[in-house]
Amino acid sequence: MERTLSIVKPDGVARGLIGEVIKRLEQNDLKIVAMKMIYLSLAQAQGFYAVHKDKPFFESLTNFMISGPVVVMALEGERAIARYRDLMGATDYRKAAEGTIRKDFAKEIEKNIVHGSDGPESAASEIGYFFNRLELVA
Ligand code: IDP
Ligand code: MG
Image (cartoon, rainbow, N blue to C red; front, top):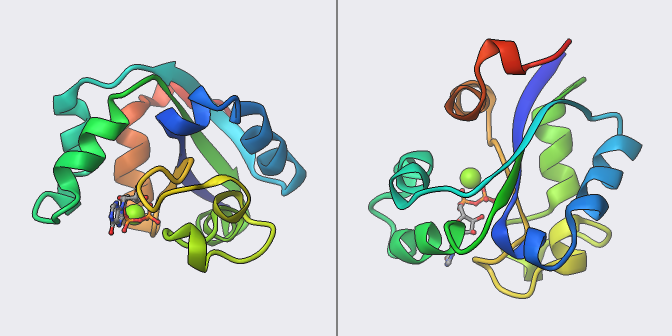
């Protein structure tokens, strides 16, 4: 069993895609073990994306992430990290496989609907960034 962090980004929330994302998680045996809607501060968004702080898109990305509320979830399942990345599709929606969330809904490389952890270390630190142990069920 593995856990991973999922975020429905501000574009996904604004476009009414929370339910669509959750439906795909539930249909693919990714169990939601924690969930909340939050409005990130700039400092919180910068902290979350600290690994990208030297990238040219960092300022734009962090401002996008505070442009509206997000839905943050911790997911659990067999190979949850990789299986959720497969459901999301490639970062660039133009390169994402058919039937993935990003292929089906994203319109820009930055505004790509969802976030997902990229490995066991980032999953653990990202879940810990948003949830304490009491907030994780199961
Ligand atoms: P990921 O979300 O697929 O893991 P990362 O490389 O970790 O992709 O990038 C984090 C986020 O930064 C992406 O989801 C996207 O919103 C944004 N991003 C990544 N690359 C670019 C880019 O080249 N231009 C603008 N935004 C980007
Ligand atoms: Mg990433």
